[in-house]
Length: 352
Image (cartoon, rainbow, N blue to C red; front, side, top):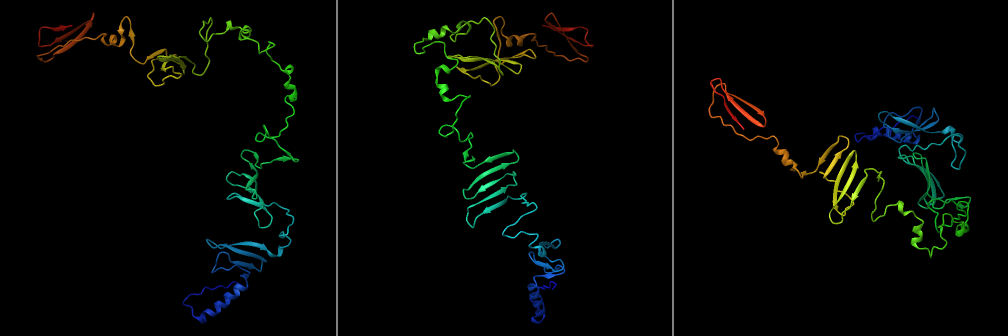
């Protein structure tokens, strides 16, 4: 029968409520069957069996429009579906893991002894998890194409697979040959190559060893004289003059600049805080000094520069005349100041 579910209010009389109650009872008993969907008094989860289609629908949404979704084709049960006891699937089974992790669980009974395959949407990691051991069996990361066997004992044909995590002393790994030779080969003195030329190391002196080395072609650590050039090939190469009772000095080149730097007593690193004692720009050929410069001939150069070409003289003008002109000239280290006026017949000069 068609759906007929009328809502009752507190103002309905018992006489007026009788027929709606009977209709509601019939509607519930008929399980909302009919040739059309109900249109009023809708509730999410309501079922409607369409007798004209032989299909069962469930109401999934009410707004903005009623959304009825097919649950099963009753006429197809037994042919298009598998029984719980099992069967054969002829198409693909897809678990949508785009929003949350999906699992395919293999379980025996109601206990916790089960295993499941999983796929995680955040990084697309998939794998096999053992709930009985609370540990993973393997994982596969598609982003790095990496298969990680997380089980503690990995075997092939009942034999342990050796890797960097389980080999080494005490592991039981039988490495029979090294470079094609067994251990007995490396125990024999006759099989060693690059042995010292002397026959008995226990009685050979240091002098005998030094006799076989060309020390004349090497620099002595206690000091020596080189007949050729010394090259330091490095990034920002440095020459360290390590002073034991005063400031250490450093000569360093870096970025087209040659630095003369300083450090503390017996220092191995220089003071990198500018200004530096001296640095030369090898590109512009300019020199920069960190403080004052002293010459044995001229003394402190900044004092010499400060007095060069400076004249000290004061001219006082006590009278003011219309058209007064002040002119100066500098010749032969003499400063001449001329005051002239169109109202004065003389030139007033003062020189220094």
